[in-house]
Image (cartoon, rainbow, N blue to C red; front, side):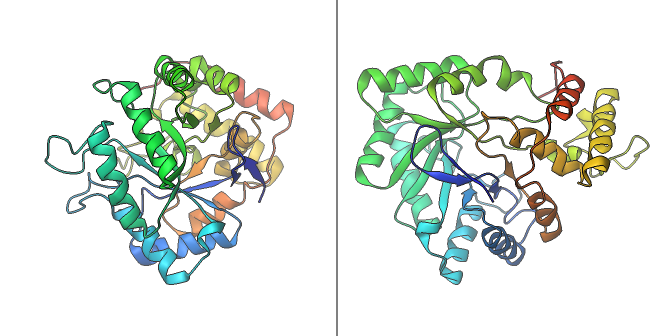
Length: 322
């Protein structure tokens, strides 16, 4: 496993990151423990979560993913210094009027709750999950800076933020001498390129931000498990927007490269990201050991210029449903 510096910091993270939205949702605690242990044994040190994972599931109060990670660290005794733990703040965590957003009131409570669930005294990368148009940037950044000074948070990151807001945040941090965002988690993969590449990529390049794409396999579509003649829509509700000629042609192109490389379709899709100098690490979300094993096969994979050109041409910018 290769390790890369996170943006302009001295923090090094594995070239593949482990997402955890599936923990306590599509992967129970026992399976989640196995995935975590296997991933770390394979060299992954970056583990990403969020406080709201996964409140949209009936009976899930949120915080379950963080709690599972904390329980796993306690059970296994893995050295905390060997891990880079990331989580996020922004979403609604209760019925109270200040139980969501990026206000000082919400962040100060949310970070304590995340630390308690993770059973740790610091978070390596604390990320704003999406931007808050109702809270001044300066309020958010000054609060996060206080957490850095207190040692509860080491670095700051953001996700789901438009380019103009990211630039405003970076300028505000510089102007007010506040801690700045060091990384971005964009929704970025072969079938969703325009949002990141149209503006955010230049911002990350100019200001040396780390880039950690989430959903790099388009919710499972870029694994190649779906076919043109699929009729069962039960498992397709999150990926059916890719069930079109553009999507099928992309799978065909990935399969042709995979056959030559003796790799899986998903490994080639991950390889497309890993081959881009701007990308720090794609964040995978396996819900089984089999899926993890497949994803790990992309470690160290770099596509050649012809392969990159073929995939770039096949995935040229076109509007994609959100």
